[in-house]
Image (cartoon, rainbow, N blue to C red; front, side):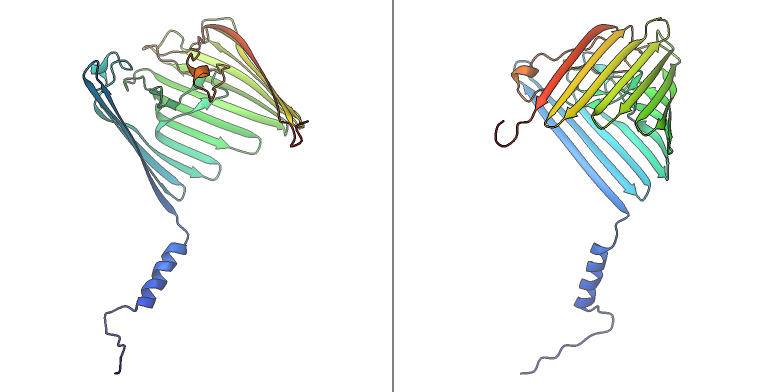
Length: 303
Protein backbone atom coordinates (compact mmCIF):
# COMPACT_ATOMS: atom_id res chain seq x y z
CA UNK A 1 0.00 0.00 0.00
CA UNK A 2 1.36 3.35 -1.01
CA UNK A 3 0.77 6.64 0.77
CA UNK A 4 1.27 9.86 -1.11
CA UNK A 5 1.53 13.29 0.51
CA UNK A 6 0.36 16.09 -1.72
CA UNK A 7 0.40 19.86 -1.46
CA UNK A 8 -2.60 21.64 -2.87
CA UNK A 9 -2.56 25.23 -4.05
CA UNK A 10 -3.99 27.57 -1.44
CA UNK A 11 -3.12 25.30 1.48
CA UNK A 12 -0.35 26.02 4.01
CA UNK A 13 2.12 23.42 5.18
CA UNK A 14 1.70 22.41 8.86
CA UNK A 15 5.42 22.97 9.32
CA UNK A 16 5.04 26.52 8.02
CA UNK A 17 2.16 27.17 10.42
CA UNK A 18 4.21 25.91 13.36
CA UNK A 19 7.13 28.07 12.28
CA UNK A 20 4.96 31.17 12.03
CA UNK A 21 3.42 30.48 15.43
CA UNK A 22 6.82 30.05 17.06
CA UNK A 23 8.01 33.25 15.41
CA UNK A 24 5.12 35.16 16.92
CA UNK A 25 5.68 33.67 20.37
CA UNK A 26 9.41 34.42 20.51
CA UNK A 27 9.24 37.85 18.86
CA UNK A 28 9.54 40.90 21.15
CA UNK A 29 6.20 42.06 22.52
CA UNK A 30 5.67 45.81 22.36
CA UNK A 31 2.17 45.87 23.85
CA UNK A 32 0.53 44.38 26.91
CA UNK A 33 -3.05 44.26 28.19
CA UNK A 34 -3.75 43.56 31.87
CA UNK A 35 -7.22 43.09 33.33
CA UNK A 36 -7.92 42.68 37.05
CA UNK A 37 -11.17 42.27 38.92
CA UNK A 38 -12.05 42.29 42.62
CA UNK A 39 -15.52 41.22 43.77
CA UNK A 40 -17.00 41.34 47.27
CA UNK A 41 -20.45 40.28 48.43
CA UNK A 42 -21.83 41.04 51.88
CA UNK A 43 -25.05 39.73 53.39
CA UNK A 44 -26.09 41.31 56.66
CA UNK A 45 -28.71 39.11 58.23
CA UNK A 46 -29.44 41.57 61.05
CA UNK A 47 -30.33 44.31 58.55
CA UNK A 48 -31.51 42.03 55.73
CA UNK A 49 -29.19 43.86 53.35
CA UNK A 50 -27.15 42.47 50.47
CA UNK A 51 -24.24 44.55 49.17
CA UNK A 52 -22.35 43.92 45.94
CA UNK A 53 -18.99 45.67 45.44
CA UNK A 54 -16.79 45.24 42.40
CA UNK A 55 -13.68 46.90 40.98
CA UNK A 56 -12.68 46.20 37.37
CA UNK A 57 -9.28 47.54 36.27
CA UNK A 58 -7.89 47.49 32.73
CA UNK A 59 -4.36 48.57 31.79
CA UNK A 60 -2.94 48.71 28.27
CA UNK A 61 0.65 49.55 27.38
CA UNK A 62 2.14 50.04 23.93
CA UNK A 63 5.80 50.99 23.89
CA UNK A 64 6.01 54.24 25.89
CA UNK A 65 2.24 54.87 25.95
CA UNK A 66 0.07 53.57 28.77
CA UNK A 67 -3.68 53.89 29.26
CA UNK A 68 -5.99 52.54 31.93
CA UNK A 69 -9.48 52.66 33.42
CA UNK A 70 -11.42 51.44 36.45
CA UNK A 71 -15.15 50.74 36.73
CA UNK A 72 -16.76 50.39 40.16
CA UNK A 73 -20.02 48.86 41.35
CA UNK A 74 -21.51 49.73 44.75
CA UNK A 75 -24.99 48.25 44.79
CA UNK A 76 -26.13 49.54 47.14
CA UNK A 77 -23.39 51.59 48.86
CA UNK A 78 -22.40 50.36 52.30
CA UNK A 79 -24.23 52.74 54.71
CA UNK A 80 -21.56 52.32 57.41
CA UNK A 81 -18.82 53.46 55.02
CA UNK A 82 -20.97 55.94 53.07
CA UNK A 83 -23.50 57.47 55.53
CA UNK A 84 -24.96 59.62 52.74
CA UNK A 85 -25.28 56.64 50.40
CA UNK A 86 -27.51 58.51 47.96
CA UNK A 87 -24.51 60.66 46.95
CA UNK A 88 -22.59 57.66 45.59
CA UNK A 89 -23.58 56.16 42.25
CA UNK A 90 -24.15 52.41 42.02
CA UNK A 91 -22.25 52.12 38.73
CA UNK A 92 -19.50 54.54 37.79
CA UNK A 93 -16.27 54.94 35.84
CA UNK A 94 -14.01 56.27 38.59
CA UNK A 95 -10.53 56.16 37.05
CA UNK A 96 -9.16 56.72 33.54
CA UNK A 97 -5.83 58.01 32.28
CA UNK A 98 -3.32 58.20 29.45
CA UNK A 99 0.42 58.43 30.16
CA UNK A 100 3.37 59.00 27.85
CA UNK A 101 6.98 58.40 28.83
CA UNK A 102 9.64 59.93 26.58
CA UNK A 103 13.27 59.70 27.70
CA UNK A 104 13.39 61.71 30.96
CA UNK A 105 9.95 63.27 30.56
CA UNK A 106 6.69 61.78 31.79
CA UNK A 107 3.29 63.24 30.85
CA UNK A 108 -0.03 62.08 32.29
CA UNK A 109 -3.62 63.21 31.76
CA UNK A 110 -6.62 61.90 33.67
CA UNK A 111 -6.65 60.32 37.13
CA UNK A 112 -3.46 59.81 39.10
CA UNK A 113 -1.93 59.35 42.56
CA UNK A 114 1.08 61.33 43.69
CA UNK A 115 3.06 62.49 46.72
CA UNK A 116 5.38 65.38 47.51
CA UNK A 117 8.19 64.34 49.87
CA UNK A 118 6.81 62.17 52.67
CA UNK A 119 3.30 63.55 52.32
CA UNK A 120 3.37 66.55 54.67
CA UNK A 121 1.99 68.78 51.92
CA UNK A 122 0.44 66.33 49.43
CA UNK A 123 -0.31 62.63 49.32
CA UNK A 124 -3.05 60.89 47.35
CA UNK A 125 -3.49 57.13 47.46
CA UNK A 126 -5.92 54.21 47.43
CA UNK A 127 -6.55 51.80 50.29
CA UNK A 128 -9.34 49.52 49.16
CA UNK A 129 -9.64 47.79 52.54
CA UNK A 130 -10.50 51.14 54.16
CA UNK A 131 -12.40 52.37 51.09
CA UNK A 132 -10.03 55.33 50.73
CA UNK A 133 -9.45 56.72 47.24
CA UNK A 134 -8.55 60.39 46.87
CA UNK A 135 -7.06 60.38 43.38
CA UNK A 136 -6.68 63.61 41.43
CA UNK A 137 -8.33 64.23 38.07
CA UNK A 138 -6.16 66.54 35.99
CA UNK A 139 -2.62 66.50 34.66
CA UNK A 140 0.89 65.71 35.86
CA UNK A 141 4.31 66.47 34.34
CA UNK A 142 7.53 64.89 35.63
CA UNK A 143 11.06 65.64 34.46
CA UNK A 144 14.01 63.67 35.88
CA UNK A 145 17.48 64.97 35.00
CA UNK A 146 20.86 64.00 36.44
CA UNK A 147 20.91 66.52 39.30
CA UNK A 148 17.35 67.82 39.39
CA UNK A 149 13.84 66.38 39.36
CA UNK A 150 10.73 68.49 38.77
CA UNK A 151 7.09 67.51 39.23
CA UNK A 152 4.07 69.71 38.51
CA UNK A 153 0.42 68.80 39.08
CA UNK A 154 -2.99 70.40 38.61
CA UNK A 155 -6.49 69.02 39.03
CA UNK A 156 -9.29 68.19 41.44
CA UNK A 157 -9.15 65.59 44.21
CA UNK A 158 -12.07 63.23 44.75
CA UNK A 159 -13.79 62.70 48.08
CA UNK A 160 -15.32 59.42 49.29
CA UNK A 161 -18.44 60.04 47.17
CA UNK A 162 -16.38 60.67 44.02
CA UNK A 163 -17.20 64.39 44.05
CA UNK A 164 -14.67 66.96 42.90
CA UNK A 165 -14.94 70.65 43.68
CA UNK A 166 -11.87 72.76 44.50
CA UNK A 167 -8.88 72.80 42.15
CA UNK A 168 -5.30 72.36 43.34
CA UNK A 169 -2.04 73.16 41.59
CA UNK A 170 1.57 72.85 42.68
CA UNK A 171 5.16 71.94 41.94
CA UNK A 172 7.90 69.94 43.63
CA UNK A 173 11.62 70.39 42.94
CA UNK A 174 14.43 68.15 44.18
CA UNK A 175 18.14 68.92 43.81
CA UNK A 176 21.11 66.61 44.31
CA UNK A 177 24.22 68.77 44.81
CA UNK A 178 26.19 65.74 46.03
CA UNK A 179 25.73 62.00 45.62
CA UNK A 180 24.91 61.65 49.34
CA UNK A 181 22.62 64.68 49.76
CA UNK A 182 19.28 65.64 48.27
CA UNK A 183 17.37 68.85 48.89
CA UNK A 184 13.75 69.42 47.98
CA UNK A 185 10.90 71.85 48.28
CA UNK A 186 7.34 72.24 47.08
CA UNK A 187 4.40 74.59 47.03
CA UNK A 188 0.74 73.64 46.71
CA UNK A 189 -2.19 75.99 46.19
CA UNK A 190 -5.97 75.64 46.17
CA UNK A 191 -8.87 77.84 45.10
CA UNK A 192 -11.02 76.74 48.06
CA UNK A 193 -10.84 75.61 51.67
CA UNK A 194 -9.73 77.30 54.88
CA UNK A 195 -6.06 77.47 53.81
CA UNK A 196 -5.22 78.40 50.24
CA UNK A 197 -1.57 77.23 50.16
CA UNK A 198 1.05 75.09 51.87
CA UNK A 199 4.85 74.96 51.51
CA UNK A 200 7.37 72.29 52.50
CA UNK A 201 11.16 71.84 52.60
CA UNK A 202 13.11 68.60 52.99
CA UNK A 203 16.62 67.18 53.26
CA UNK A 204 17.73 63.60 52.67
CA UNK A 205 21.23 62.41 53.68
CA UNK A 206 22.49 58.97 52.66
CA UNK A 207 25.66 57.18 53.71
CA UNK A 208 27.02 53.68 54.07
CA UNK A 209 25.72 53.43 57.65
CA UNK A 210 22.18 54.69 57.05
CA UNK A 211 19.98 57.66 56.16
CA UNK A 212 18.66 60.79 57.87
CA UNK A 213 15.52 62.48 56.54
CA UNK A 214 13.95 65.76 57.66
CA UNK A 215 10.90 67.56 56.30
CA UNK A 216 9.20 70.78 57.41
CA UNK A 217 5.81 72.07 56.24
CA UNK A 218 3.72 75.17 56.95
CA UNK A 219 0.19 75.86 55.69
CA UNK A 220 -1.08 79.37 55.15
CA UNK A 221 -2.50 80.93 58.30
CA UNK A 222 -0.07 79.49 60.84
CA UNK A 223 3.39 80.48 62.03
CA UNK A 224 4.33 76.97 63.16
CA UNK A 225 6.44 74.69 60.99
CA UNK A 226 5.29 71.11 61.43
CA UNK A 227 8.09 68.62 60.96
CA UNK A 228 9.01 64.96 60.60
CA UNK A 229 12.44 63.44 61.31
CA UNK A 230 13.54 59.93 60.44
CA UNK A 231 16.80 58.06 61.06
CA UNK A 232 17.70 54.59 59.83
CA UNK A 233 21.02 52.89 60.55
CA UNK A 234 22.52 49.44 60.16
CA UNK A 235 25.64 47.73 61.49
CA UNK A 236 26.29 44.08 60.91
CA UNK A 237 23.19 42.08 61.81
CA UNK A 238 21.53 44.96 63.65
CA UNK A 239 19.34 47.79 62.35
CA UNK A 240 17.85 50.87 63.97
CA UNK A 241 14.82 53.02 63.16
CA UNK A 242 14.03 56.27 64.99
CA UNK A 243 11.26 58.72 63.98
CA UNK A 244 9.81 61.89 65.46
CA UNK A 245 6.79 63.97 64.44
CA UNK A 246 5.38 67.32 65.53
CA UNK A 247 2.24 68.34 63.64
CA UNK A 248 0.43 71.57 64.51
CA UNK A 249 -2.41 72.86 62.30
CA UNK A 250 -0.91 70.92 59.40
CA UNK A 251 -4.20 69.80 57.87
CA UNK A 252 -4.63 71.15 54.33
CA UNK A 253 -8.21 70.55 53.19
CA UNK A 254 -10.65 71.46 50.47
CA UNK A 255 -14.05 73.03 51.07
CA UNK A 256 -15.58 69.57 51.67
CA UNK A 257 -13.10 68.78 54.44
CA UNK A 258 -11.10 66.20 52.46
CA UNK A 259 -7.37 66.38 53.27
CA UNK A 260 -4.79 66.80 50.54
CA UNK A 261 -1.91 65.76 52.81
CA UNK A 262 -1.25 62.62 54.83
CA UNK A 263 2.00 62.86 56.84
CA UNK A 264 3.68 59.80 58.38
CA UNK A 265 1.65 58.45 61.30
CA UNK A 266 4.58 56.62 62.97
CA UNK A 267 2.60 53.45 63.48
CA UNK A 268 3.64 49.88 62.79
CA UNK A 269 1.39 47.35 61.07
CA UNK A 270 1.69 43.96 62.74
CA UNK A 271 1.03 40.51 61.37
CA UNK A 272 -0.91 39.61 64.52
CA UNK A 273 -4.63 40.39 64.63
CA UNK A 274 -4.75 41.41 68.30
CA UNK A 275 -2.12 44.11 67.80
CA UNK A 276 -4.05 45.62 64.87
CA UNK A 277 -7.47 45.81 66.50
CA UNK A 278 -7.06 49.41 67.62
CA UNK A 279 -5.56 51.39 64.72
CA UNK A 280 -4.37 54.92 65.34
CA UNK A 281 -6.29 57.77 63.71
CA UNK A 282 -3.81 60.51 62.87
CA UNK A 283 -4.65 64.08 63.90
CA UNK A 284 -2.50 66.26 61.66
CA UNK A 285 -3.63 69.44 63.44
CA UNK A 286 -2.31 68.60 66.91
CA UNK A 287 -0.08 65.59 67.40
CA UNK A 288 3.41 64.79 68.64
CA UNK A 289 5.04 61.41 68.86
CA UNK A 290 8.09 59.27 68.35
CA UNK A 291 8.90 55.72 67.40
CA UNK A 292 12.02 53.68 68.12
CA UNK A 293 12.70 50.24 66.76
CA UNK A 294 15.80 48.03 66.98
CA UNK A 295 16.15 44.74 65.15
CA UNK A 296 18.81 42.07 65.55
CA UNK A 297 19.37 38.98 63.44
CA UNK A 298 21.50 36.39 65.28
CA UNK A 299 23.73 34.15 63.23
CA UNK A 300 23.09 30.46 62.64
CA UNK A 301 24.91 29.50 65.87
CA UNK A 302 22.49 31.58 67.94
CA UNK A 303 25.16 33.88 69.39
